[in-house]
Amino acid sequence: MIPFVDLKAQYTSIKTEINAAIQGVLDSCQFTLGSEVAKFEEEFAAYSGAKIGIGVNTGTSALHLALLAADIGPGDEVITVPFTFVATVAAIYYTGAKPVFVDIDPRTFTMDPAGLAAAITPRTKAIIPVHLYGQSADMDPILAIASKHNLIVIEDAAQAHGAEYKGRRAGSMGDMGCFSFYPGKNLGAYGEGGMVVTDNADYARTIRMLRDWGAEKKYQHVLKGYNYRLEGIQGAVLRVKLRHLEAWTEGRRAAAARYDLAFSGSDVRTPEALSHNRHVYHIYAIRTAHRQAWIDALSADGIQTGIHYPIPVHLLPAYEDLGYKAGQFPHSEQAGNEVLSLPMFPELTVEQTAAVSAAVCNLVAEEVAA
Image (tube, rainbow, N blue to C red):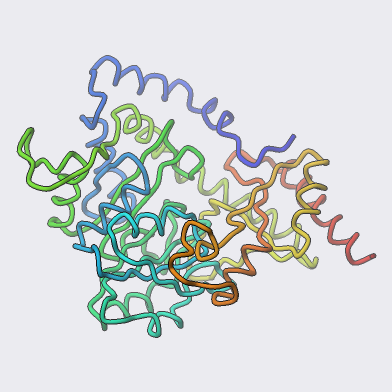
């Protein structure tokens, strides 16, 4: 079996460091926030090219609090894309604001800036570009449009730890950047975790209060807040893993390059990494009009795959109240019908990528022959 992701292989490679870090938290008994979280906040903010980091319990909470810090609420509109994990849109709903969608660029699966201007109304307060699969959205035109209309830009960088756009790190280009440390992410906790990074001290102060019941000091509740604190053990684990992240990222990029080479000259539709981007390949998604047949065939060959994501948010029953219909975002809808995620993790071996690519090429050849 070639797994879609192999967290056990990663843990085995750093087991001694991880165990010592966890034991340190057990010895200190700083289980909620604490020194390990504070140090991780500093280290990850610096890694991401930002001045300040605020650790929270999930990436969804990071988005929620970033929106609240930007004073977004009922009556406001926030522009994002429908081809994303549902959390991007759920966080907007949590504030009482209305999500407004623009379609994706089919090359990159990220926001198409060409659709932004038409989506802006007098109620628009913010834009959330999603750096999907590990590749940054086209930020320069997004930032230019936001500046022209005095809009906040909150980057959803949940899948883009260490990704770059023209030399700038994902999360550092907008007003705030939001990250997830879900276990399967490029930088994943051993549980849940998230962070907001920013250069804005006022936003940071608000988010720090909101994550801890709105308190500036213990029992002094300035705002109506939430219990969104990052746990000490997760901070310790993430500090260890951050030290390995660049090596792991290069492992992912090397595996993607092997896939690209194996598929070159074939009819396999591979992901396009733009030349000015550093793609960190959280996901390596190919496209096929025969996805379920490919999933079944690859599974029979012992190869696990995934789908990220089969249904764009505007077509999910939970969000039908937004009033969107099938056909309004054709690139998102086509991607939802066609994307197929191949095994991708830093420890993926040459032999494994060769086996996966051979199996995929065989499927293409069979379709051509038919």
